[in-house]
Length: 503
Image (tube, rainbow, N blue to C red; front, top):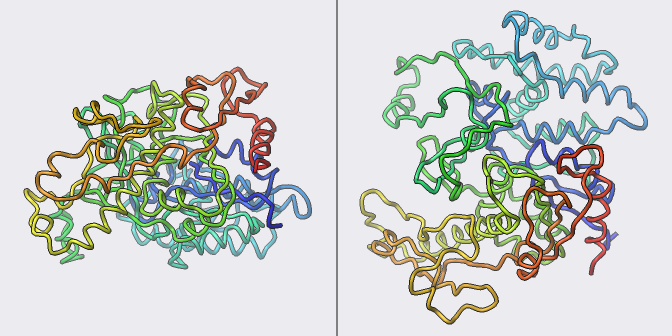
């Protein structure tokens, strides 16, 4: 068993679901890691009314993994259909609410073929969810497009006070057994939000605004700190502004063609005031990275699905220094999207590399600040700039942009840029003393060893340049049932199997 492969997969919720069979056919020993920063669809309404982490992508992967073969297949199929079911997105609001009540009360036909013990277990947490919504009736919860699986997971999380306990319950009821795991990249009961800085200086807040904005002006608002602290001080005080319950992210189109005003420079996590924060990952993620044999960066939205898993503290170091990871595989998207318009394979590689170097930079900054607490330049920030990011480059290009003096340097070898030559944030360096030599700049091959791409990929792949980075390129045939550049599980499985057999 020691020689059996084991996968650690960073992915989003929907794209990777189409290729799950490619992994499961090789081994069940898989850990799927998903972000919790989505704020669209049914999840957006849960966040507005109840708060907490985003669970839509987790629910999507869990329901995808429910097997409908073997013993009790009819019941598991019925449970899968129930937990995958969405209430109508269009139609009379009262009729939609009536259908929800039929589900909660156990009268809906979706309960057919589900045993009484499992029905009452699932229904119990839906009743709890409904109770929590009813307590907050003043917020006018909108059931349109509501996911029953999301409602169940939320009810379980609220009951246990633990997201992972809710996932365990879901897995137990649906017979998703170890060694297959589905883990949130951050284990929290609080909301995690991301923001993107564009090259033109604009900042987009929230995943929906970055990847698939609504048809109207974004409703993502940063909480006014005066209002926030008023609420904390006097919870029962009068509302500062009216809550009309309108949610533009409830129904959206992921295929939006609206272009960004400028390319994305980088992403980061933010608190409710819009300030950059540095969350710690789920400790289990770090443990899996230190014990698994194969790491996969799956297809999906690069900046809003994959990178939120990579920029967390300690993740970059764990991947770079894992004692067990033999292969680190990037499965390249077949097309670009709003986030990656104009990207090549080299851009995908550079973005992942810089994101993981950013993770290590956060670790280096923390250690430096912790050991230099007596430094006056650190304890007397100017204009409220507490420990700003000490580099000025974004994620797209590797090597990172050089300062003018660096371009004349003769110290570069084999594509490496001397760490001291990485573009430093001049505003930071003039106020603080974070040493440029401590800025991480690991080579792409530290994080990626193989690139899998489609023969008809719309994302250009310059094989010689990619392989000059010591990354092996593997071209595979696309899904023959469509002209679109999409993966076929059987072909992908063959490619993955050939990689894991390598020494």
